[in-house]
Image 1 (cartoon, rainbow, N blue to C red):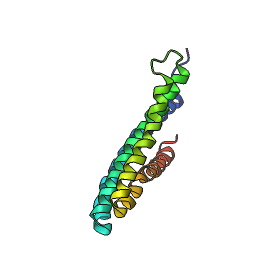
Image 2: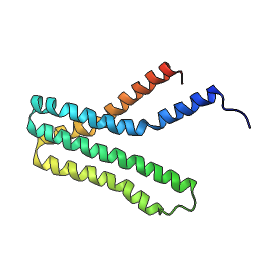
Image 3: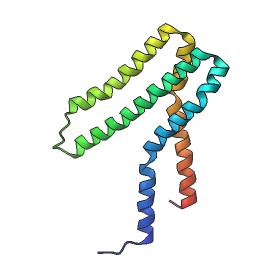
Image 4: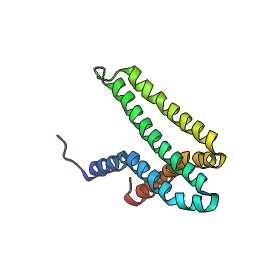
Length: 145
């Protein structure tokens, strides 16, 4: 058996670091949404701020469900004896879209301003992913991954 070399240790630590990306993206989503609710409310009104907050929460739930669905599908493919049925995984995957469409429809019927805020709120995970990509790039350069 070959001894564990520092290079292997660096690879192990980089794998641990990059494996935490999903948790960081979810945290960044919540931080961005909480930081932007007040400025959105001040600049565009209360209805838009409420729509933004609802959109951010729906996008957080949607992103989390997407990640879980992808993990479940991968587990199902890798583990032939998986206890979870394929139909259940696909049904949960599709229910994400029903959730987003249902909330968007309800908000659209209630207020055009709130709907505009909702659409901006749904985009918050994109900003979180950009921050994560920047953080990973900085960390890779800083730590030599």
